Amino acid sequence: MKAPETTTVMAAEMTVEYRWQGGQFVRFERAAAGEILVADSWRSEATRAAAFDYHVARFEDAVARVSQTRFDWPAIWRGVAALIAAEGAASLFPRISVETSSAPGEGADIATGTGTGTDMATDRGMGKSTGKGNPSGTLIDGALEPPLVLAIRPCPSAREFTSLTVYDGLDPRQSPQIKGPDIARLAAAKATVGTDDIILRDADGVVLEASTGALVHWLDRQIVLSNRFDRQLASVTQRQVYDRALELEIPVSFRAVRPEELGRGPLWFVNAVHGVSPVLEIHTADGPIAIPEHPQEAEWRDWWWTTLQPIDATVTSLQDRHRTHPALHD
Image (cartoon, rainbow, N blue to C red; front, side):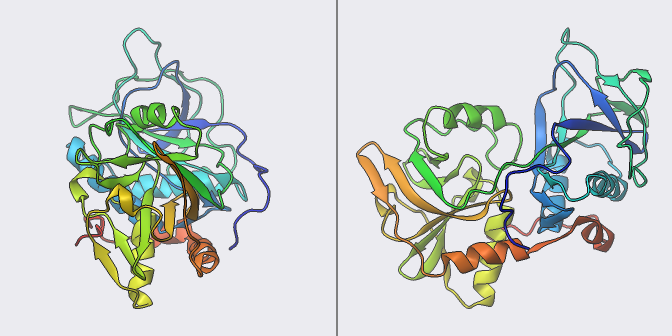
């Protein structure tokens, strides 16, 4: 599969939300969203995604950190696959999340239809209103289950190249190892610059990652990845790059990367939306830094698109529901 050549969204032209309720995803609308506790998201092209099993494992592991709820993961992922399949050839950016209830006084959730976790193939659960939903979650075995929400969203265009700014403020994240709770804080920080994203640094100035993606440094003919594991998210796409580097016998090292090393070698921005996106320029307080080109960057960029595989087949192949995400430093 190659990167889409147009920005046309074939089916999903707006965001539609579903809540896991009674063993199925039910479409609903709400006046205000709850606070995101955990989230995961990925590009879906015609029902295909890259390393979807890694996304599944990362999300389940993160949910286990913040909730004791026993979610029916096999049924949930079958439901996710069915809803994505219902969109056909669309370019999607689905997000699954566990949230707190909607803020008091902001309005209750309204369920607008029902469906099943496996058979929602045509109407996406649309139908007549069934009345007010439960904005605070669902009672499971007498305990309150936090809302699990799937948002089917149109996907942004793939970004071939990336520009970055070294963020001059403190890392705004409160939970850097979990995707979700810091989304709003990161968006606010990124909005202060005019580049595609920002580079976050640790308290001692060491380079960590971007606000929406990981960084892959090429220094001295080897890949260098940050070793500040407690200050960054375990990136699915960075893990893919790491795995391929091992297959190609490319040296990979984990260490602290200082800001003054930026520009000494190629740098790639990687995430589950854009894949491998080489960085062209980094803006710093002392001026812009031109980033050298890697001779195989086009090959690596094209390779990532070949890793997109059918989501439903991946879900079917998932057997062990207690795996942990294969963190880069394992």
